[in-house]
Image (cartoon, rainbow over all chains, first blue to last red; front, side):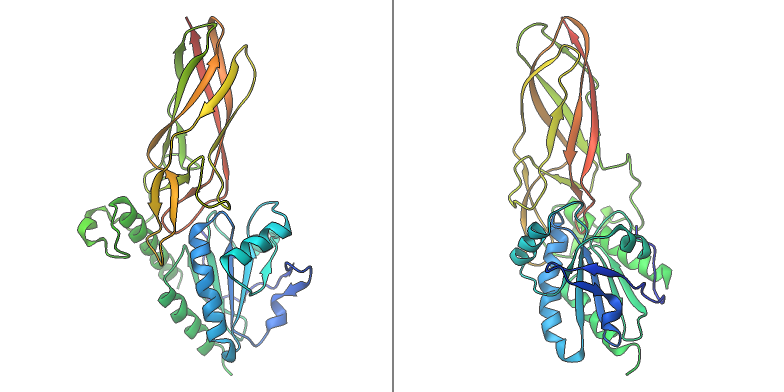
Amino acid sequence: MAKTMLGEVAPNFTLVDLHGNKVSLSDYKGHPVVLNFWATYCPPCKLEMPWFQELANEYKSKGLVVLGVDQDDGMAVKDVAAAAQKIGVTYPILMPNGDVSKSYQLGDYIPDTFYIDKSGRIVDQTVGAHSRDEMEADIQKTIESGGE
Amino acid sequence: MHSRLILRSLARLALLGAAALCGSSVWLAPSACAQQIQFGLTPAAHHGHVQLLSDNVQVIAGAPHVVQLWFRVEDGFHINSHAPLDQLLIPTRLQLKLADGVKVIGETYPAGSSFRLQMGSGELMSVYQGRFPVSVRLVAPRGESTLTGVLHYQACGAASCYPPQSLAVRVALSGQ
């Protein structure tokens, strides 16, 4: 399973989104961030993602940012985009990079989600799908953490 | 902090696995089968969650013959059937090599069993769990030969999934 990174500073990364734009974690400094690793072949991931979208909308005024990092191996961008559309998410989906998986010490299964506060620290990390209530509680904790 | 994360996630996975194992349709209410809940990682019997059970098969030499290759999915896990209900899911597929004088005519897969995620709206899936056969129609030569290939599949537990895997298949055929 993934090693825990609780309390650590979230490693920065630069990945490419579905539109070809470079996205770095540091772009969102000062924002609470949910970083969710998922794949198109993972039904539990696809169950969580619409909840992340709902929560992203609900807590947008609190500065919440949700980023999805696809973990499919060799899948074309257009296919990942089609899957994201089918799942119903509009938050940024980033294409995979083995270095990011390594820096976040991912285990061999997904979903794997990191809750990063405004100061850039990981305040929670979950493996496997969780309920919407648990996700919301983690998001609230993340928003409240890290100072103003 | 480390132990909190590990215990929380493992407890979660154990509950989900137990709920799936005892067929409960009630989300996070596995009390009726609490004896199946185990905290901690389930020991993996083998890497990849799928095992080939067949290793030696007798066939009628020189004529089309159906051989059943049996596989076993590790308890608490499932793999997609050959015909998953969602086109994004990866079907189980046996890819056999043409070698050793064995002519493969085709494969037939069993229908999957229904599996519903025990969360949210509960997506319905077509999966293989436990033991399942793939029937291979082939023509084998007289004497000893070997059927080789790869089983492509993708495994999930109740709340998490593993990357697509390939299991090497090697079965001795005795043509009589």
